[in-house]
Length: 81
Image (cartoon, rainbow, N blue to C red):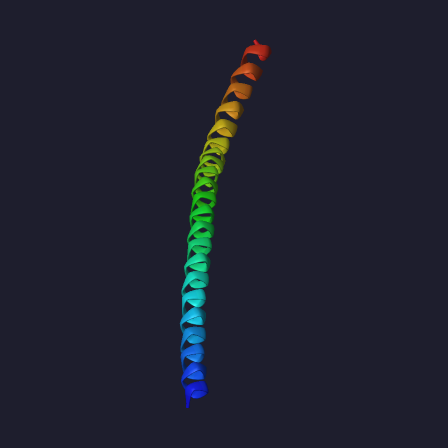
C-alpha cells in the first residue's frame, strides 16, 4: 500500500513538472514569435518607405523627359538662328 502511495505521488509530481516545463516552453516560443513578427513588421515598413521613394521617381521621370524634350527643342531653335 505504501509503495502505491509513493508511486502515485511520484507520478503526480512528474505530471506537474511536465506541465510547468510545457508552459515555460510555450512562453519562450510565443516570445520568439512575437520578436520575429516585430522584426518582420519593421522590415516591411522600411520596404514600404523605399517603394514610395521608387514610385516617386517613376512619376517624376516622365515629367523630366517632357521638360528635357522642351529644352532640346528650344536649344535647336536657338542653334537655327
